[in-house]
Amino acid sequence: MIQALWTAGAGLISQQYNVDTIANNIANVDTTAFKRNTAHIEDMPYTYKLNPAIPQPANEGVLPHVGTGARVVSSPKYFAQGPMEQTERNMDLGIDGTAFFAVTDGLGNVFYTRDGNFKLTEAEDEYGQIHSYITTADGHWLLDRQVNRIELPAGTTEDDISIDPSGAVVVGGAHIADISLVEFTNPQALEARGDNLYAVTGNVGPNYLTNGDSKVRQGFLEASNVDIADEMTRMIRAQRAYQLNARVLQTADDMIGLANSIRR
Image 1 (cartoon, rainbow, N blue to C red):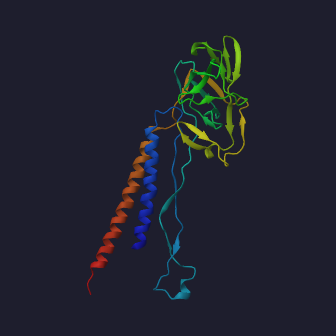
Image 2: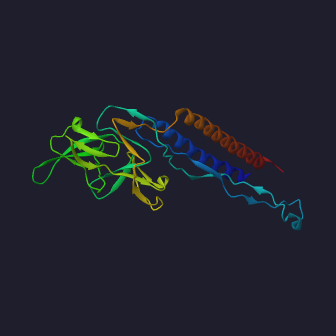
Image 3: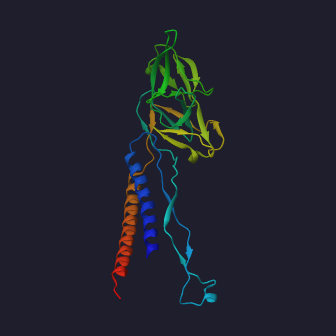
């Protein structure tokens, strides 16, 4: 009966994590380029229990397996592409393919994102000169293929900017830079940093500039890849599993209480 408490408790913990993961997906159904997570749950190692009614030699090979509960082993992101939504805004860029934009925080850190909601940001240098850059909504600079910030001519407006499917940035007919479109061998190993940013880990594998398989679509934004109907179905299943584990916990507690109340 004590083991039943631990088994049910492990199930509650894993299903609570599952519910929280699904709730986060649902909350981000309208977040640009959001990638959903899925909690992977597996059973924990089984133990062997001796049957006192069977002589010790006869127990060999017929020991019953007793489960010890469930646990969450991983919660990977699924980088399937979300639908493209047309915005008709020149600084909105969607990626048709598996690549990522490369951005920097200005402190030497490079991050990757699928969120193409960019803007023009002006900054004054130490000599008082005004420079225009393409940045994310949070102020991270968009990088070109040489891992440099993309600087635009002073006075450039959003209407002046044209970006072709290869990522070439053109202003007033002049080619300014090529946007860095980076692909990864194992994108599931990217570390989510919040604000739609990802950082490279040791398990990502080699990263490389796209060979043209991924295209930039100007005037579009990638929507979340969360399927609200699927998430609601998974939420109901997770809640039912949580309730079942809670009932097992309550039943085991009742059985222990009955055993403790037995008088000789």
